[in-house]
Amino acid sequence: QVDLLESGGGLVQAGGSLRLSCAASGRIFSINAMGWYRQAPGKQRELVATITSDGSTNYADSLKGRFTISRDNARNTVDLQMNSLKPEDTAVYYCNADQIRYYYSSTVLRNVYDYWGQGTQVTVSS
Image (cartoon, rainbow, N blue to C red):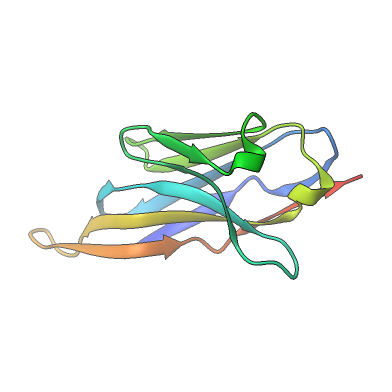
């Protein structure tokens, strides 16, 4: 009924920039917080940044100042601008929505919780 689709990953040299985008599709009524997480090989998935529907943001301490999360509620999208990339930023980046409220039918709303996209690979070469 709903989907999260990431785009914008790729290969970049250290010091470069990338912008990731995530678009929620489906008959969406509202989305609560959205965010980005990442998982490097052999490591656990970790928080990158989150943003609430009213624009409040939260970042991993180590990424503050280099990464910026933004959101367009009308388009149901969340972006991640990544600057001054380092090889240690190499990971699969996942989009997340903690709650998506959507039209199951014309009169019935349903919720999905802790919803994930399939991920997009970011590789930073030294």
